[in-house]
Picture (cartoon, rainbow, N blue to C red):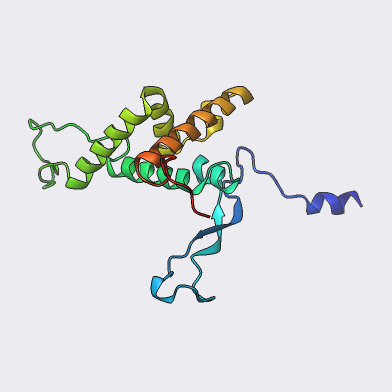
Length: 184
C-alpha cells in the first residue's frame, strides 16, 4: 500500500518549481465587433486561461486586488518600458568603428522618444519612490516577494503599487478623476 501512495506522488526535481499557474479569467474579446453588438455570439469579454504567475500585475488582477483601470495603466507602463529597451536608451560611442559590416548604431526612434517622454511624465506624477517600485514591478517584472521579505513589507509595497497605478490610471484616462459618476 505504501508503494502505491509514493508512486502517485510527483517526483520533485531539485531546484525546480512550476512557473505556470493557469486560471480562467475574463479578458477582452479580440474578435469583438461593434457592428454586431448585442448578439450572443459577439461578447465584449470572454473567458481565457491566463498564467497568473507571469507577473505580479497579472497575479493581482486575477485575484481581483486591482481593477481594470489599474491593470490597463500597468500594461501601458510596461509597453512604454519595453519600448525604451528596458532601462532606457543606451549612449552613443562615435569613436568606435563598426566591425563586421555592422554599420552605425541606430539613432533613437520616434517611438522611443515618445515612450521616454511619457515615462518622464509618469515619474513626475508618481514621485521617485513610487516610480522606482512601478519600474521594478510593472516594468522589469519583479515579483513582490523578491523585493520584500516580510509580510508587512509586502503589504506596504503592494499599497504603494496600487496607489501608483491609481494615479497613472487617472493621468492616462483609464479611470475618472472623481468628478464624474462611474457607469455600471
